[in-house]
Length: 180
Image 1 (cartoon, rainbow, N blue to C red):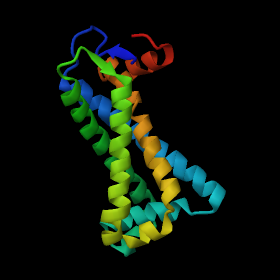
Image 2: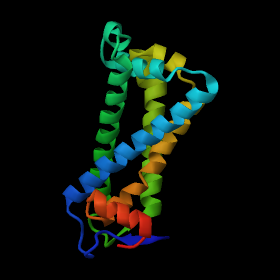
Image 3: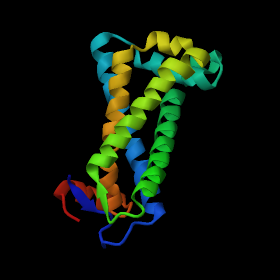
Image 4: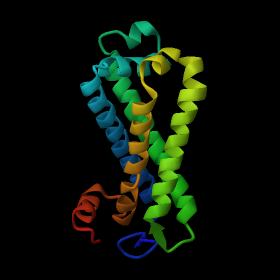
């Protein structure tokens, strides 16, 4: 099992560093989802704008969702939810690791992937059929699963941001060099 120090100084990272790292990792996961669904849309002919408008329709009226800014609103909603999921993940990882001296990539990877697959299953089989059946009818299961799985894998970056004390500039250096 590969383990890394929690913080550059070797001290336990404060909850704020975990929260910031979770937010950044959530945004990265949201980008991964957009990339996967964008790629799928490009090869399948599925409309990315329609997917984004359907996200908006989950929270607003169809008039707003399919209006001139509906797709943009859907993208913003997607990223807000992604960052919120990342923040919750950061707090969860803080609670899991608060009594440990190291952060475990495998533990973060498994919990991130399991949580995001669970969110996907809940959304597609429980929540969305009730509140937005058009989304479930339009977006195929497999690409949506792969996109959510990619989000979960993107949370692996989370560990690097914690190692950098939640600082994005320092995290870039850690990601590039593999050293603190």
